[in-house]
Image (tube, rainbow, N blue to C red; front, side, top):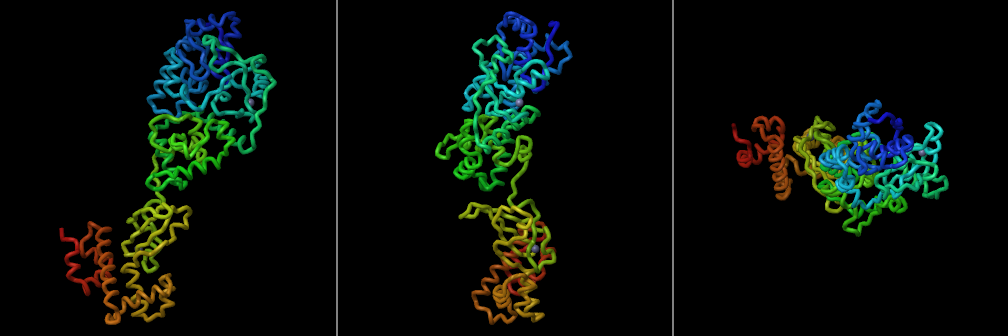
Length: 490
Ligand SMILES: [Zn+2]
Ligand SMILES: [Zn+2]
């Protein structure tokens, strides 16, 4: 049991805390410090994902410090590296940090060892934080938020971070090195990035820090589903989920710019079949560096806090049913009554096309996706006017004897359409050509079959109530067919 231990500072690495203990204890040999903390001199000093923490905790817990869990979550890079990992990996890493002494094994588990995003070679510091810490605490210390890979700036001051002279993977493995004026020199090279790049660098630091401040508990499947949703919504993949990789790579590069992507070792290339951007849109069998998730999520206009809500959402390019009937002749005009909607892909644009079929017989299609509320009321093409519309037209033209102009106004269509259908529906059937009669019969049969399909449970009597004019037409002109094509009594 130790008789003294320093106070842990905000945003301080456990590594730094242990290093300050070494300084304060006045232990001459780093070995003595190792023995004080771990009971053994073979323990390894690891800045990002330290191990054997239960051992240390047992020796210092009487100093009224926070729980071991909080120490791991807030004062190491555990959450940063495991946020996008499966739960099993998260648990294994956590256990290994608590009990084991194999830091190399942990780095293998989460793929840091093989990562293409290289970690910093030296422990990093912010010159302004460094000064402030000496002023306020009497000593400098290593901050968690300065050590994330791909993070160039201080989240508090916006200053560029600097390399210290302390190696991140110290060859002296059994030694904790505290931040000092000597190893954090005040002369440093200033990076000079464009304002756009710097804004993105600030975004990366904020998002990296966000990962460390909460438990996100993402799953591979959830991440993948959220990405699929967002890619569809942004028009970067079609409704079947096929990603337009060329467009994606071009827009991604245009969005971030080469300078930023090269600075954070995440350049993209459409020509490269192994490009990370292609892979991150596919089924997640392996993990990706947190930095790349941050870049991808921000590109999709979301953040690590918000993107996961799409993991359980289905993408509806035309919103959810019911849809608006846009038949001006129906008493439910502009009401949400349509449940029958099919989506296909436009062969030219690969955009989704919806066909809405109403029980009033009115069927229309529209190319999507809908973007604003008004899109709900747009008609691309009317595929079928239906019995309600035709009955109204018949009444207007042939019963009330209104002009084509007035009928067209009432039915919100052009005069040509009124003329065509008025002639076709003329009570003087001799005026119809043989062709148009066949046309009408085919259309009416389709309408009747659609009606049965939309209402599979309904009897003939009920169908007749829904579409009296259509039923009457078949009864008068097509009775044999109607008898064969009606639901059987149950
Ligand atoms: Zn700072
Ligand atoms: Zn309708």
